[in-house]
Image (cartoon, rainbow, N blue to C red; front, side, top):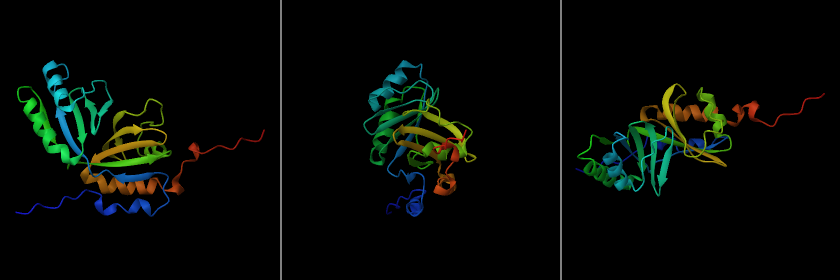
Amino acid sequence: MPDLPSTTALQHRAQDAESQPLLIDMREREDVAMIDLRGNSSDKAFMKNVSAVLGVELPTSPRTSVKKGNTTVLWLSIDQWLITVPLKAQDKLWSDLSGNLAKNLAFACNMSDARTIIQLTGDQVREVLIKGTSVDLTLPQFNPGTVRRLLFADVAALVHFVRSNPDVVDLYVFRSYANYVWEWLLQTAHEDTRLELFRSQTEPTV
């Protein structure tokens, strides 16, 4: 039986962002595999066995992440992490984790097809994002490496601040909402929707 072609949630929308005057650049990250990992961070054997596979220790501080090479680990909760690697590395990573954790009370699951990652780049990224959430993402505490789960445009989402100057933010949403969120971003990131609050203000006449 021939292999079925792999398609991403937004493969058919790739040109949309290039044809409109947007405040930011936006694209779907296609070459990313996601492994959901559950385990007890106070279990030294579990932490050691995971580190042996990843080559980096799992982050244990809330809303943080670590990165080594092409591997990034996002803290999701006290017993849950999301590991991202290039697609070509997913089978080996999942196999190695499953093997190393066979004697631990832990669970690793390939969730690559469950989520879509929309990467947003530009000086106005935070301006666009705060239109869809009650969380003030303009605060300085949201620096590179920060991870935050939130309600975005009325759907469950996660943001990962990758870099700054200009900001690069990965927005994770469930695949079934990808089209909706993409369209929402196209509308609210349009040049005509720029927030006056963040523009240079004219000094009032005294």
